[in-house]
Length: 147
Length: 150
Image (cartoon, rainbow over all chains, first blue to last red; front, side):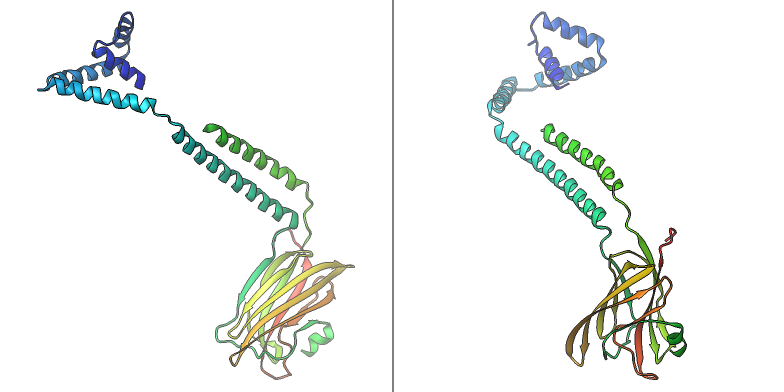
């Protein structure tokens, strides 16, 4: 679409040479989007042509053209380099997350659930006399009757 | 640019796709239901001052940890049930961090008992008080075969 805009703009400036100008004309006649863009460009060009100092406009256009050329000729390796590293880092992060998650999940599956823990809060203010050693007793009917 | 992202995505999908297959091959670990009633009694088990009954399930051979925090102690009781003949073998391990009159202490112990399903077991983390004595903490434990609805 951007190329189309450039082409239409160039056509408005009479910079498109035959036979391509005919092709552009035909496209403008048949394609509403091209027609709309052509009308827009034409409007802009007309307004620009009405400026008081057409030479300054030419100079400005030349400046823009030179800058665009300079941008095109500048090597973009560093920009690509950065983007590649960002992509690679993102891919590595996703990969690490998935593999790590899978490992964690697999660990849980093979070793069973981790230690189940239940928390019991005793009544506040309650203190137990910390005397004696622990005892584990199996209640028999005899013991049950006596306790 | 797009290549590493697609690669990672495809690898992730492969890994995630294979994961359930691995899980299905593993047999389920048997479980038991544990009825646990931490309670504070006074002199007699029939005189209960406080209790907090819990119905829990545990995997055989895997510890079930109960943490009890009191005003002057932190108690951690780890109960592990093993199959034993027609019943169970219960291993109870406890760790107590306590503070009494400014002094801090730590104690640990391991005890075990063989039991049958439904047997009532009593665990006194701080020992049994003398009859008619002060309040004491007791954990009433009962192990049953696991029921599916748990």
